[in-house]
Length: 353
Image 1 (tube, helix red, strand yellow):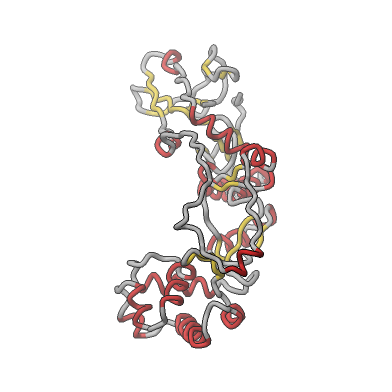
Image 2 (image 1 turned 120 degrees about the horizontal axis):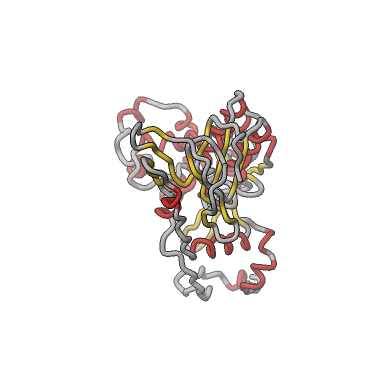
């Protein structure tokens, strides 16, 4: 239960990456911050779950929460403005689906006789095994990688937030092609060590990557054309077109050449800063990033309150201004409103749903 003495300058109704950054910035410059979230975990839709945590999250969203009768506490001349629940719009039709992990013949690669002799037997993973080993891996709601020279990494370094987390360089970039998983040659050493490319293809690839680093007049003239057409004009071949389009630039086939070249340059400029690939990833999942900013906010005096949220705003009908509220308390067992009692004086009520 919140008290009347809670210092408040900035308040947000859920904790995601943007809100965490703003909260940390406000707290760092001396502002007073209250950060509340209806969830029991940090990072909202950026969260990272263990397998058991994901099962708990599914169960919570399969149960319809009961509505609180806040209107019973209103006095004459007052009204409530309910705030939207972003989870209600983004999470729909949540169901359990148990499917056998059988692989069709079309998806299976066709190994040679020599390969089939040395291929290990596949181990069947059961549900009980996943639950038992559930803390040995994380499941990210957002699947993203961070460029080594990206704006987010620069922010983590300049703000000293990076000290609150541990990062690893992604060891390899892989692509799925013709039924096989192949390693994408990123650096100069990878290109010349690759067994998937011929000598001619290696030279073409190095020549193209070198020309991409600096923008030329020819590239400016064709910037509106699809990037795939630009690659075909270079006569690189299907192998290099696939690597450049899907694994280095990571754009769609109809993306303009300007965007494709910009993405390729970003990829190349991020190489070698922390390892052989341009990508970094938090050891414990992407959900660590919002938590790091929340940790900085708390270090400088920010207050965090999980499993609570700003439920509605109390407005005076005569003045059309927000009123101070001190009439709500929560029943932590059934999540309903109890008898009036002071909680805060900042014109909002708090909900634990």
